[in-house]
Length: 97
Image (cartoon, rainbow, N blue to C red):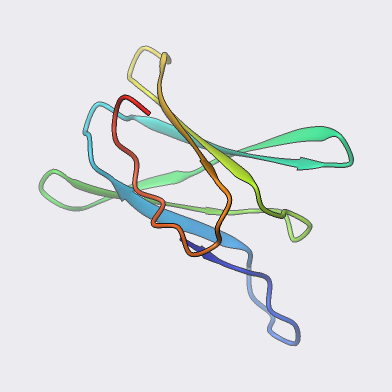
């Protein structure tokens, strides 16, 4: 899910966030594109309860949909990815995508 940049609000938006449904995901990056250049931003992973992880990332103010979310395992291997085309998408990541 995302929170867009808001006019007249001094806050670190846009922000994306979601659930991690598989504990083998250890790192997560969000890719955006600006002027033909790919910008990759690392997300923060937070364990909110035993075995329940969420993620969030603050993107550059110029970031716009689509976003590509990539999840990596402990060895740094890409194990899941998802393209977000809708700002109201859940942002949940599972393996095999």
